[in-house]
Length: 212
Image (cartoon, rainbow, N blue to C red):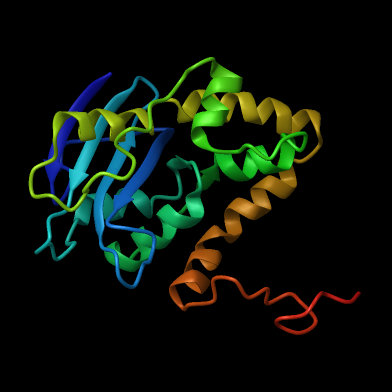
């Protein structure tokens, strides 16, 4: 694993092809309160790029926005709903061509309720991830080496997880429904930004059980 640190944006000369793994770190989980602090990107060879946004950032990350909006480049996330929401809210761009390992896990690993990244890496890859830095201060002006390593390990396994989950999606005949879920994620993120986090807009009436 090779880690490269950037402030505010990626350099002009960095190119990606095929697919990248993406994750974000924020001050918390409330998009209207907690700012985006870090975007992590890994290519299939585990070359990791950390893009750090400080407290006074204007989020004018032209190169990063271009990559997120590129329909020819697949972006692999775990729990893409949150990451896509943060990118939409702060970078003001949609994330095109999305794959979410958590959704793929929900659709295939129906024998368990354990769908965290740590659980997936343990079962499917035999990798035991450390979550020690998960709740550390991502808003700091200077990230500690431990934070950088933690952020990197959250993306370097996503390509392998996708390969494993694709096999399960095909086996269970759920590839198409997964693809449809992935395509809906930008809309789901926008609903979250609008504050419609828990409402089921497909229900007969909000706050009651759906009647068919």
